[in-house]
Image 1 (cartoon, rainbow, N blue to C red):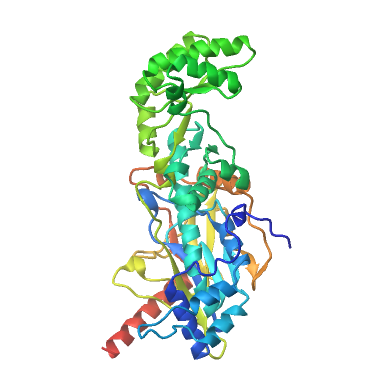
Image 2 (spheres, rainbow, N blue to C red):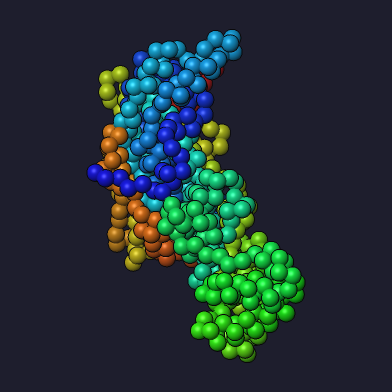
Length: 496
């Protein structure tokens, strides 16, 4: 089947197989050396805690993940570099036979994932990778970096848009982003999360996101006189006049914008609006709205920027601010004030020497870090369109019923929500390395995120002390997990 590009395909030419941590390659060499490289295994990409002290995450980054996997191969240059890497004794770290194996490697993993824009909650598989252990291990780091970052930014954008109360949010963050990829990935993810447009023109070209922008303070400073600067801009681009009014004196700037707005109207154009970028945004927006309305420009929009985030926007609304559009840059594309999503990639099951599946588990002194065993799927329950609970179950054993067992506290009693519809979240995108489903386009992912958020309880969407969404294990996985924990701890004691 055809596999349309995500746009970001064009940014990185050739192989990205070395976009990984060295230990992935050393483990791969170990699997090859011990003859277990083709043994089938299942990994799950999950996260443990929602970012921003919030209640959810919006899954994003899948289309770049699939683009990465489609292109996955080791080139001659990659292998030549790996041949120069040495061990502690200054000998070649990788045997020539292993490098030959990598040269011939073709990805044959099956990849199941939740579609982009889906709400996901702690411990739920976002991506499931099934295939030869060597291959599934090698792609871990790239999948984590792509999904962690874009899911984090999409979630931040959704929070900012929620605070904006249906006023458009324009992502302004390219100049403060962490490099080129950070800027492009953030623009993409912010659009999925609900941003209406971006200032990032390359993102507009590659991804089809609407672009917005007018002029900077330097335009006014270059002309030396604000009124002359506005007139010059109106002469050059009469259909794009949102004037930045705070270079010298904000309210005087609004009056100058009104003057040029009247001149535009005489020529058959309209003043699009003004932009506030400093000062008391609530007070200035109220005064600017009064001046614009009295001058006969009720349709002129007031755009506000200046280190905004969901909390500042909420405060502005509480103060009665008259802001029509929010430009959000630094604190959106850098995910202020949580720099990373704690996504993890954990082994759930492997084939033993006889070909039978063997569930595996990772223990920890922290219950939140104990992994969930099996080949996992997520069943989402809804009632009247509202999300009421998710159940993690083992695909090999089937769904054992709509009762949730607490993941982190097994002493808590089970819970069965009322529901009238259900669906499984993970769908297959690659089958043994071959594409069987294309990722959704950006507009579809964005629409899904909006629909999912509308179906999530306001108690879980609130910023302060959100109510945790109900996620649990089904009976089989819960029982199996407790058995494996007991066996592992007993085994540890016997070897102590």
